[in-house]
Length: 59
Image (cartoon, rainbow, N blue to C red):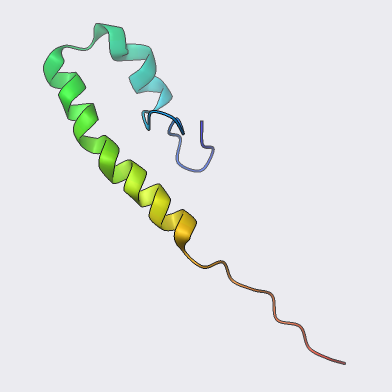
């Protein structure tokens, strides 16, 4: 589980979605599946963003 997003890094679902999965009907599962590409792409974009570098002053 990614601590920042709360999503599983393998399936992109939340712990609540994973726990409830066996009880969800097909429509509810489709609703979760519809969100997964956005979650994955959002994390990939955040990972690709440049990280700020510390600036050092000579002195």
